Picture 1: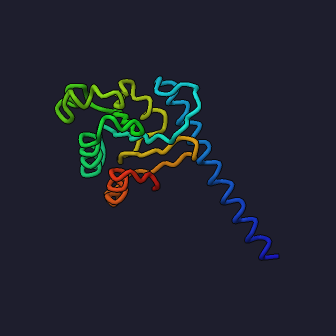
Picture 2: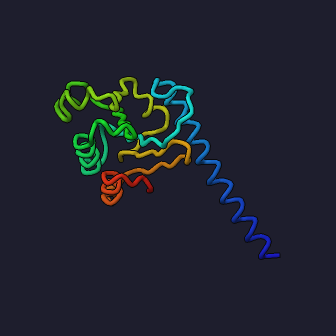
Picture 3: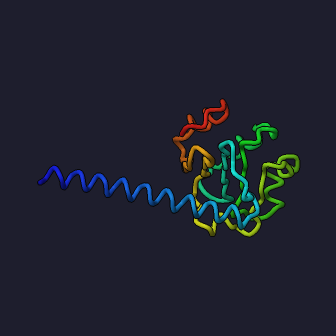
Length: 156
């Protein structure tokens, strides 16, 4: 009897985890659609969205900012979303015009991502596409993940 109860608890926990992930995915798709960043086409490849808030953990934001500045703008799998920022002028000081005008950089002027539930004091990396949906808040211990993204490994 206890064994059956343990199995039920495990199944319930797995169900809740999957449900939360699916809910977050649906929420992300809604905000992407509202922002105009995605259309209804079927994605053939996974995309990496990196949401960089204007405020939060200073060292974490610095890592994300440096990653954006150093990334090759031709890497179409990376999409950077700058949200909840103070002003465009401040962004220009941090990144420079050449970075802000890249095709893969989106200025979330209406804070759709922040207000849509994708705000953290840490940058957030989202892998989205045919292989599924994964979300990771990049805390101070995420240096290895930044490094793996630089090297083209998107498993986190």
